[in-house]
Figure 1 (tube, rainbow, N blue to C red):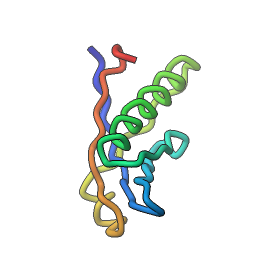
Figure 2: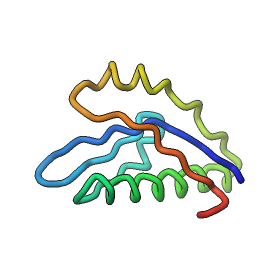
Figure 3: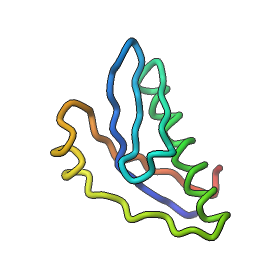
Figure 4: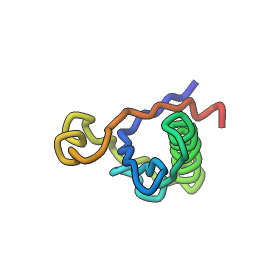
Length: 87
């Protein structure tokens, strides 16, 4: 089991929930509901990290969730955790 966790920003806009990872901008995704956005966030995080590791790149250091919350008060900040072995 290889768990990774990164903070993500969930922002409601135009009837959808946009998801941004400050440390991994390429993992951007969205969903129609918060549950769907979280599911897509997990998938996007897993794909992005697996891609980096598959190309022998280091995964970036995850930012502190409290700092991300402070820097982005317009969004909901949550920690997204995935088991890379499941993707």
